[in-house]
Image (cartoon, rainbow, N blue to C red; front, top):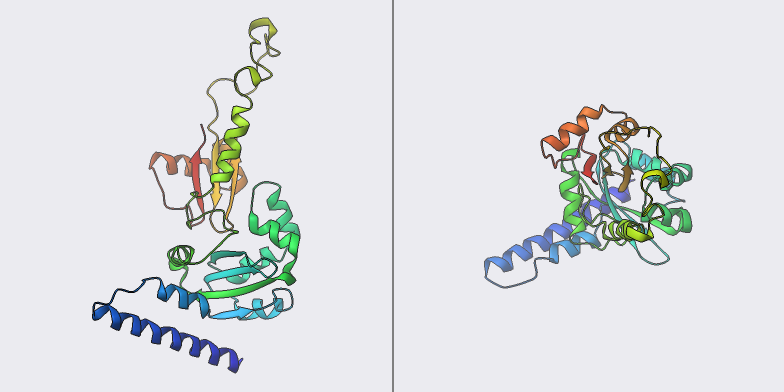
Length: 262
């Protein structure tokens, strides 16, 4: 425990030392890369655990009721995931549950979930990059996303559905594959339509399909209606309606962002 505190203090001291040198050089008008502090922040993390499986108990104990920025690194290919959590121990409980990861993947996509299940926890290291207040998590996560590699992150910016290029392209391909003559219902009108003469459930005003992004778990799920999404999130559907009517961009409850699909 003493060694951990000593190393943490020493790392912060070295980092501060280089920051002071960097600022000193700037004052003298020397042009140096502003990425230097970011590089040293990456080299000197607050805490490191070389084996997520073997260090599991220690990770939970030392990060209980703490918020901050963390990194998961695949030791077999050196690919990383950077995330933030208001409660690190709660987030880790989810990561260490293979059942929870599997269930989540049935509803949405996540590169880090797939990697954890494929390579197992023993092939991942876990790093605390920085502890911060819950209010600073998104801001600090964005800081490290802009300066550190993060191959497993689908979102390129914390709190934003941006960066889901592959996901959007896949939906576009599927949509184009069912357009015009490629659609099995193309040309089937009147008596030729299978629903001719029948009252179709839900007919009338079309439901608003939406996409819900969980920025804490880095997942996105599409729903056929606002009501369906509200039910899944256990919130009132009026909350989502108001989110759109106010053109809100700030994540609802600091966790969810909503996007209309049609």
